[in-house]
Image (cartoon, rainbow, N blue to C red; front, side):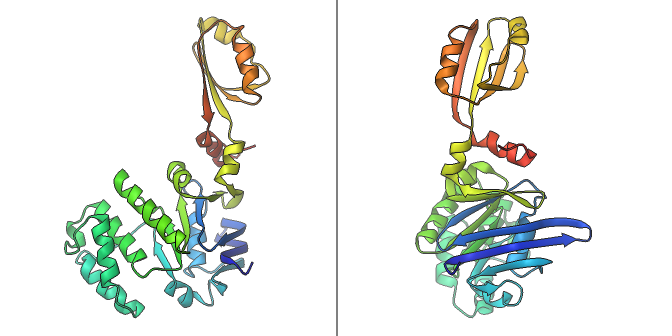
Length: 298
């Protein structure tokens, strides 16, 4: 417990009669890149706001660096970098004057490190927000989040409006920071970016934790997708589904299935069937995540 950069224990938060987060517990170590996944409305942003002391938990505790998220919120904010999922910036603001303002607020000169990040993210330090594209505004938010070299980065949908090269640039920066000991708490509803970046993930559904494990562990639980094309649609309609397949979709002569058994069972069985085509895909994390979101995960 002493090595946890972020520690949440039994935390719940409600808005009136609606429970946003229920009995959530997480432990995240220093230098971890941790993915926090769930569909919109799952409770991810509420969890982040409690962790940063912007909301008070109804029950349970949330800590960063051993400090209580509500009582010691100012100390946590001093060591944290945060970008919200709904970034708002003043229209007159430029990267250069924003770095001056935030530097004064934090009591340190951020200009050199901030301008280095501006150059790395490839936008102008002197263009005002009102003339920026949405992607440029997101880059500015990231620069302000990163410039003071925080001990923990709390990122709520940080790749919003970034094109693929800039997404990759952000991933590179986050990996570098993690190697230096920064903890990265990366909230998203997009599996692909979490899969390419994070080492461990937690999945939230309707405010409840439904999974927490390594990406390697999730891949081990993911099923392969088997696609079968029958020679005749009538046969596809009448053929019995073997026990080692779960038929997910039937479209004319085409079956889309999940593999429940061994690959060799499929190979032996299909050799005896009137098929025109067959494919077996690698383990499918996307399908597994959809099942978590729908409440049907194994």
